[in-house]
Amino acid sequence: MIRVHIPAPMRGYCEGKDVVEANGDNIRQLILALDCSYPGMKDALMDQDLLKPDVAIAVDGHITPLGLLQGLSEVSEVSFFPAIGGG
Image 1 (cartoon, rainbow, N blue to C red):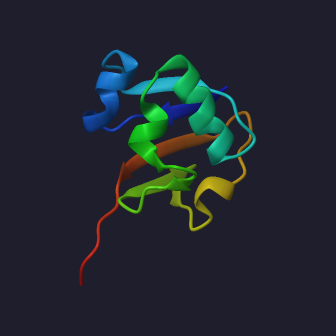
Image 2: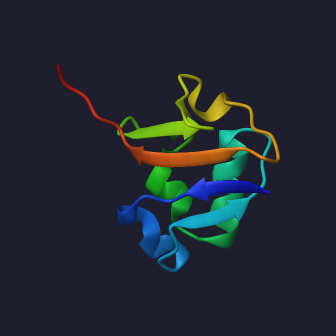
């Protein structure tokens, strides 16, 4: 199972847990699986069929530029967090 680190603002969707587990071959499938177990997660992370622009994703400790298309393995660790912009 994939370990998913949940940021504090989203923990209300998953009973206050900071880490949950789910399955998926890519980030899109993972979010849909999370939403089945923790309703509201999809709306927190996606706007219709796209990743929200203020959400960043790290897979195995590395920010992914592929977003929802990023492939995952059964031992992946995924972190969602607010994207930081500016310069």
